Image (tube, rainbow, N blue to C red):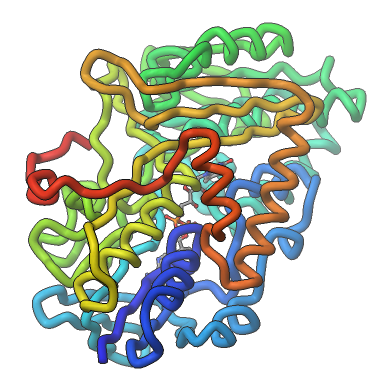
Length: 433
Ligand SMILES: Cc1cc2nc3c(=O)[nH]c(=O)nc-3n(C[C@H](O)[C@H](O)[C@H](O)COP(=O)(O)OP(=O)(O)OC[C@H]3O[C@@H](n4cnc5c(N)ncnc54)[C@H](O)[C@@H]3O)c2cc1C
């Protein structure tokens, strides 16, 4: 009997646990550890911050949905991992494992800039449920006494989509409330140009983002480094100061401390190196899924940026990892799988939205992808809402990507996973992060 421990019950961890349970016979134990009692559908957090939804509408109680799938749930925080001994330290116990799947998501590097973050700083974040609630409280205070707004991404950030979504949603909400004329909005990004998104841009993303900014009279500051924040101002590295009463700036991400402290486990920023199979190159018992995985950047940008890891890619990783562990345990036969890193993202801008399809997410050395498409229109906002409900239904039912969803993706040329070529499973080339 093997014990497979999944750390983190987010968009990567919960589907990983479900898929492992699906492919492994019951003699193998699947354990899910979460430091939160709930699963949160993170892509809906911008709506929480603007009071358009409440947290309970996008969260599921893990104790209700997980044990009934034959998965042991431990609600505790992992404080250390010893990959040599295959041991995980929790607050109250030490747990041995045969395989560990790391799906912790990121830690927010709020110490990257003075004044960054809602606790001990002057900026809001929408990166986790707690921060989204704090942002919601700050937003309600702001509405009572409005002033200038800054939205953007700090140097070193890698997740840019939610900043655009948040800025356009703010515009929409303020317009609905008749407050837009009183509120100058500035968008400050470390990307070399708007729509770069940490992936060298895609299709007409540059033109589209600029068009949306201009038509909404949002001042755009591209390739701009923020240096620090004060209660009523954002200070830029070039010495300029932008007055601001409400600030939402996405911070850089890094790996959680317990991973960074384990010798040889992560890169300097705490991200997990992975082989194409998503196994750690040096520790055979460790696989990783989601934002915590290391992803080669497309290019060095004048101001540092990273590449995002979006939800669909995270699910692809979960499918591959569960399959590859089942192969190693001799439960199934065949080839190892790897995620195709094909990505689809929906962004809601209030009265319209944008859909991005990147196949794959990162272009090749010449800047080419098989496909890169953007669509926009009000129907994208409805699709995002529908997708949220569908994803929550899947998590309630214990599904990862059911057969009809896989067929749907295949029908539009997105197989999600593919066989690992034998020689590439040993690709140990050092990545740039
Ligand atoms: C605001 C925002 C909007 C986004 N919008 C989109 C979108 O529209 N479409 C899209 O495709 N992607 C979107 N993304 C990206 C998407 O949310 C991520 O790809 C996805 O959440 C990654 O899943 P994950 O499992 O790596 O991390 P998470 O979903 O963050 O889950 C990690 C879990 O691990 C837990 N954890 C952390 N440390 C420990 C520990 N020590 N012990 C136990 N548990 C621990 C955390 O509490 C958390 O519950 C968005 C991201 C953000 C921040």
